[in-house]
Image 1 (spheres, rainbow, N blue to C red):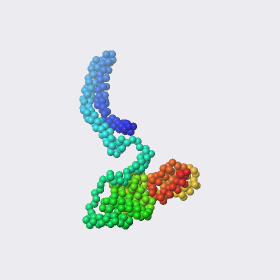
Image 2: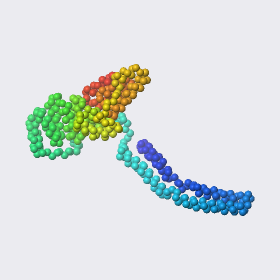
Image 3: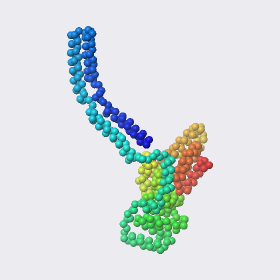
Image 4: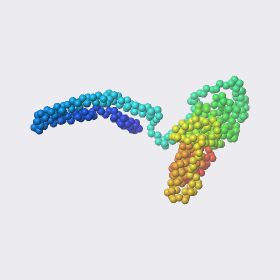
Length: 409
C-alpha cells in the first residue's frame, strides 16, 4: 500500500507541473490596453476632483476630458482586438488537462502491470534467497513433472526403422544384462521421442556399469529425464547431473542443464555464472554452447547483469594474486588497505557478472579474509559452493580458501 501511495503522489505531482501552464487563466492577465484603460479612467476621476477644488478651469477640464476620452476609445478598441487572439478556450484547456492526467497516471499503471510485479509484497534479498531454496527443496519430482508436462508429438518413424526398434526392444527384454543392448535401446528410444523409455534403459546401463559409468552416461540420463519432463530439471535429474559433474567438472551438457536447474529454482544469478564459465571453455560448434548463447542474454537480464561482455572471448581479468598480496607488505597500512580493497572489488564485480574459475573464487575469499570482512567472505563462499556443487575438485579449492580465511573456525 505504501508503494502505491508514494507512486500516486509522484504521478500527481508530475501531472501538476505539466498541467499548471494549461490551467493558468491567461484571460485574467491584464493586457497593456486594459492597463491603459484603467489609467485613463483614473485620470478622468482626477480631473473631476481638480475641478471641484478649483485647481483648473472649466474650459481646461473639458479639453482634458476630451483628450482622455479619445485615448479611452482607442485603448478599448485595442483591448477588444487582442482579447480574441489570446489563449485557447477554457473548454479546450479542461479537456487537455483530463487527457494529460489519464495518459500519465493510466499509462504508468499499464506499464507497471506489464513490467512490474503488481500485488507482490516487499521482497528483500534474504527473503528471495530463502524462497529460492524452498523452491529447490520442494519442487515436483520426475514422475509428477512427467504427469503435468504437455505431451510432445512423437516423430513419424520410417517403417523399417520402427520395425528395427521393435526388434531391439524384444531382444533387450530377453537379455536384461546386455549393457550394449540397453545402450542402443536408450539411444534409439530417445531418437524416437520415447524419452521415458530412453531414460529407463539408460538407468539400466548405469546399473550394469557397476559404479564405472562415465560422466557422459549420467549426463545422457539427465538429458533424457529433462526431455521427458518437458524441459524441467527434477530432483532426480539434478542428482544425475551431480554424478556427471563429479566425474567430469567440465562436462558441457551437464553444466548447461545445471545452469538451467539454477534458473528454474530462482537463482538466475548463479545460473548466469555457470553458463558464462561454461562458454569460456566451449569447443567450436558445441550444440549446448549454441543453446547457452541463445538464452544467456535473457538470463543476464533476469540476473540483473546489463551490458554483458562477449563471453566467448572475454579475457580473464586480474585479481589479487599471491604476488600482489606480498607486494602490499611494503606499503603503509592505509596504502595496503586501499590496494587490496581495489583489487577485491574488481574481482568481486567480475565474478558477480561473469563468473570465474574455482581459483578466482578462492582468491576472492582469501582476500576478504585478509581484509577482515568475514561476513562478506562467508556469503561469497556459500555462493561458490552452489556454483560448483557436484565438482569435488572445485569444492576442495573453495574449502581450503575458506580455512585460510578463518571461516571454519
